[in-house]
Image (cartoon, rainbow, N blue to C red; front, side, top):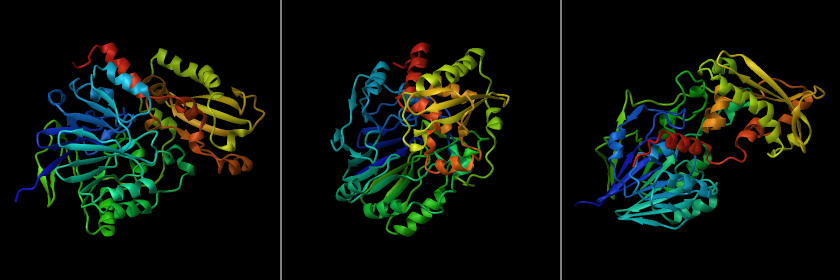
Length: 454
């Protein structure tokens, strides 16, 4: 007996192609390596951009605006008649995509299904519904949940259980230490086991197959983040999930790999020809905690020197941009409800630091420090990364910022225990009220180069 089937192929990271009958849809299409400026595919791949330009998808779905899910340089490779469905509360993103030349650009609404041929794709509510969504994909009598890299709250879990049974769940398997690496001297090591709520949620969903999804990257080969950022290995995920869900099978999908799912089985299918594996694909993450992070000066030496104009942009931002901006961005923690002295250290390509000291006033912003207060916060950053954030939309994940890497006086240390590291003044000035900086920088480059694919 022949069963109706659904073919699922991994592009990279959270990118997938679903094929059923004569229809093909894609999710979170990333055709770059590295992507997001500094995310190197793991395992390694390259993309045949010429062949990608010849692909025709019946629709592409984008779960949210983060640059590792929505890249204009990747979208630029697609046919402009491709229907795009985006989940985003900001109209700016839709405008930018239309400036690329796409004709059919549609907003996604929670729990409102989109029908594409045999596919029924329904956005489901993630924990941070202002940012991202999950996808329920139904076709050929099969039911797949693409969690993307979202978190699931109890209300949504109950709804999803009611939408079962589930044939496959694409589950974000990595608990990236994005915050902990900012202040490694103050961070605890990662727990040795998967989060309890993951196991409980997967048990409630009870899928036939679980795919460890998202997070297919490392940082630069020299980066200490590669041993501190990724605490969960594929082997650990498979071991713990298999033990907790003996009726489920954990299936790893590396880039280009395809499987054919039907009501009775899961079998290999031809790989994506335009995603080309490079080198060993049987790789895994190895976590070593916060062991011996290098000084910011050493990290800064890995980056090329800035031009005179770029260096001037960085210094001007530190001297005038931050004082002008700081008063408009509020802190979430009470630590900054009283005046604090802050030192920002910017390291050039030679590892030499330029120090800026500010007095942070809760009501009137940042002014030059007069030395009356004890130092209460420190931030270090390579100049190249500060420039990249200002002009190229680089995200916090890869900026190698180092926060409060010293011991303050006893009173300050006691107060700092209740402060949130992402209340860092530089983080707030760069990211608190910006949207789509990465995509805006991409669009400027594409338009200036006149290289938009038509």
